[in-house]
Image (cartoon, rainbow, N blue to C red; front, side, top):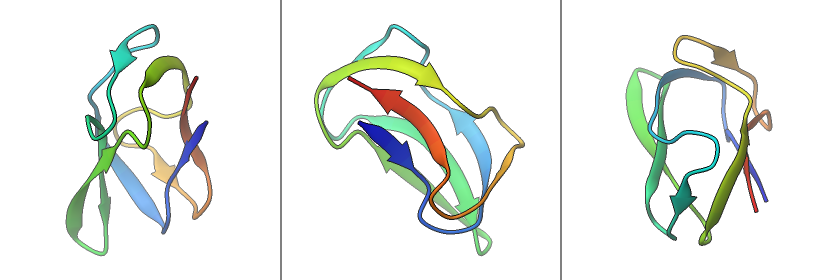
Length: 69
């Protein structure tokens, strides 16, 4: 499952690493949009397969932040 940003954002932090097991609702990352910091929760249980961004990266709406399977 692709985890995408919903609006233009800057990645503040990535809270998981590739290979980590995550549970639904667990925080995956913190992004800042419109001067507000937002948590990015896992929509499903799974394993982090890849991370496409790091702290400081600017992301466009719909950009993939990470993939969970």
